[in-house]
Length: 145
Image (spheres, rainbow, N blue to C red):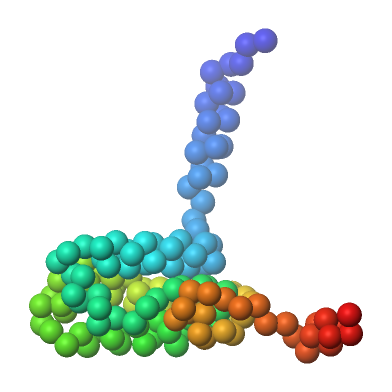
């Protein structure tokens, strides 16, 4: 059974167009938060800006945590007010600052009601370890057993 070149071209164009779909707000926030986390990890190992990264608080982004807005706002403020001019002018630090500000703006303005927050553990954004918190009705069921 032969496939005509027109049918093959049609199927290839459909697959290509499916990959070109614009990202949703959630997927953009998720990919940008992963990109920022990777960038922070790389900058902590990079010798030229390692000293500058010591001024920054630890950052673990979880887009499902309701405290992400305050954490990002504080992180961008610290990035903008680094104590030395050397650190503020580094291109990699400026890129990190730009990415963090973009993520904050996307979450705060564009995805304001689109994101669903599963937790409100603000300490998890500092430590990177999320402790599951059960609702009161779930906790009563666990205590009865």
